Image (cartoon, rainbow, N blue to C red; front, side, top):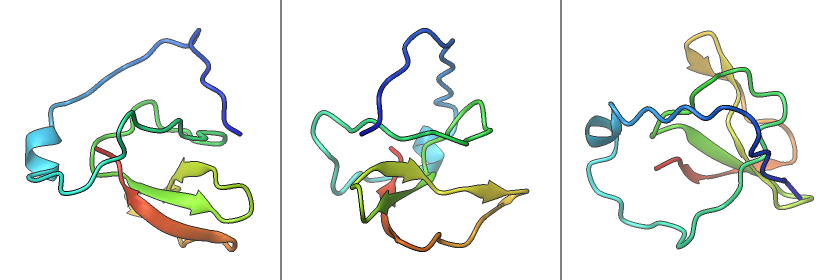
Length: 83
């Protein structure tokens, strides 16, 4: 299960929120903790694809290679979009 590490500096960039997400048709009340192990980006913007590891149920941001998303890893499914 992912854990929240609260000692790291947090950056929140909402500059694209109104551009990327026009209507939030379905959301998870209270949100979820993302497993960001191996994520190199300092900021995850709204609109980032979220995937789910089927064996553990952990939610993770889809990996990015350059300016495009990497292929979906084995044992994962698409779960939603970061809002």
